[in-house]
Image (cartoon, rainbow, N blue to C red; front, side, top):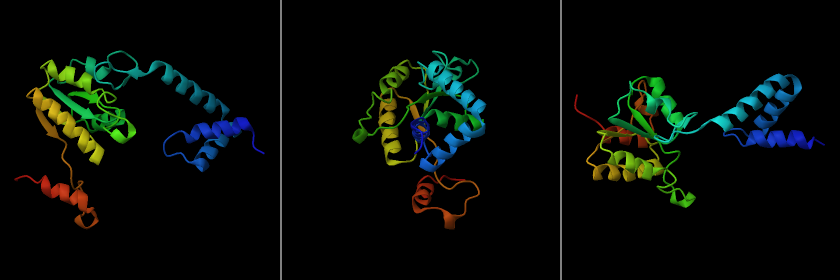
Amino acid sequence: MQSPVINELIDAFKLLPTIGPKSAQRLAYFLLQNHQQDGHRLASAIESALEKVGYCQQCRNLSETEICGFCASKSRQTDQLCIVETPTDVVAIEQSGIYKGQYFVLMGHLSPIDGIGPDELGLPILRDRLAQGEIQELILATNPTVEGEATAHYIQQMAIEFNISVTRLAQGIPLGGELEYIDSGTLGQAFAGRKAV
């Protein structure tokens, strides 16, 4: 019979996304067998992050300070606001090196079935920010899912109230993609979003 403490550790690992029972078991035994120092380091890092990291009061991104580095930066364009669903979306956009504006992180998308409405996404905070008049362009970078599209539409309507230009990230065929391997939904988006050359 397996130790209740080990079972608790395995169950804790299963709380993480994409970690199933086997992976959780492997991780638990990996740390307990020969890597206890790494386990202590991991536990310390998790505890520290949970204590110190909160949300930026302006954009809702993860931050150790009340105002995150993106919002506090004087080198970023303050008239562009990119709306994303998660902090990892911010990371992906930043890694591209293309965008130099501000962000607003929804921490999800509208999902009435799950009880996630405008308030849970911080949309009253976004409305207040739009009302300040500094934002000239709102870039919708929500995921191309039904919920993401519904969320984008809701936010677009908010922006229209303040006469703010709204753009949406292009969707379609990825660079280097071959048509025969593209799903019909993506191909449909590519045709709908085509532009003159």
